[in-house]
Image (cartoon, rainbow, N blue to C red; front, side, top):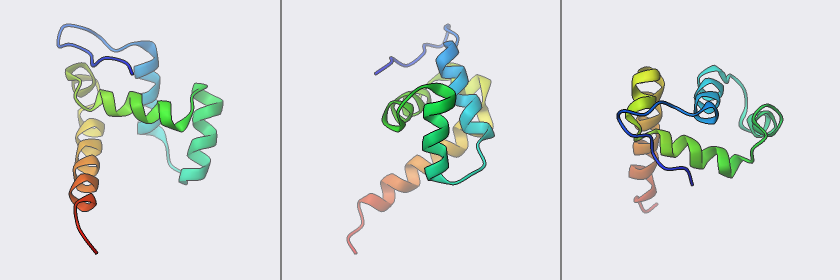
Length: 86
């Protein structure tokens, strides 16, 4: 898994492409998986690893604050829901 980007570092080309893809995606989850493979050449698992690593990245936050905050909220909501017993 890629390490998080430090405050004085910039995003890699791969990280920038993942953020651009996530920001611009407007479709269903099955289509998204196919598009990840086609456009980024990565599996959904690898994509998720890179994307989750970016959620704590100061460089990613500086580059895409609205996107990063939205993704952090979604992550936090999923974590909160995972602890519930139905």
